[in-house]
Image (cartoon, rainbow, N blue to C red):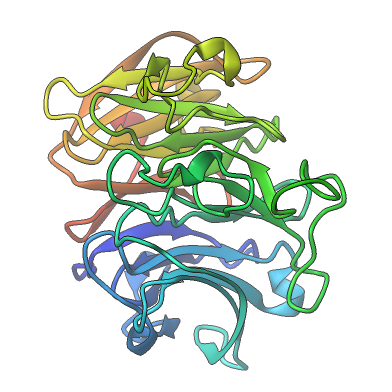
Length: 343
């Protein structure tokens, strides 16, 4: 397979086609069909995308009824001003090509060039979830993650089946109150990747840390995950009342020893090819290239210490195919599938 250009994500369309869709950061989506990377991009919006650093085409989610309606959604950084755009596209009459007409849903100005988040995914409830970073710089200088009037530093949930351009679920925690109704959870620094457990529906979100601690949260509606007051289980900004009893605690964390610096969230394995991994949450670190696995138990908790698989990859993402088999995305240009031999 030819090298990919800064790949950041892998997913499927849920249409029983067996295809894999690869997000390339400069602004293209590529298709792998029957093990072959197709030459023509599924979507090419490079002229709209600001590419560089943490900016680019960052996320892709197919509508749960994509097979019927051809709708899919992307998250990218807009070229002219660096704002985050959540936009809708449609497949064309040619199944391996998308229509380039865009319908913007949500525009979020970005005060700095980093911590854009990037992940979008449909939950079991049919709503679209959007991970928004705190807007960047260091230490969240404007305290946006704790501000309910800001979309930055939050996990959002919207209804893309209500127009225009979207609706907010009636049970979102701030609907009818003070704050933005799109907010589902608060206190996040840079929720780069999150996923839903296929069996339980639990929402596993890895939040990239600042100086010392990387964390994984099992997110619930209305939860506050502590940033910028907490980094993992530890006080970060001591100018504000600090204590883990005030916030929802991560289910696991790790520090920056051994070249570790940035967590890449993954998936709870529910495939069939590797029975020993069923129920294991798989995640990694972008800098060290390590892949971790920790067994999950009922209630969105973990059991025991993580195991470690060492690689030389720049782990930008993990991804699932239609069968629940897991892949690793290497930003250097490669994809890897988990197999019984890799366990």
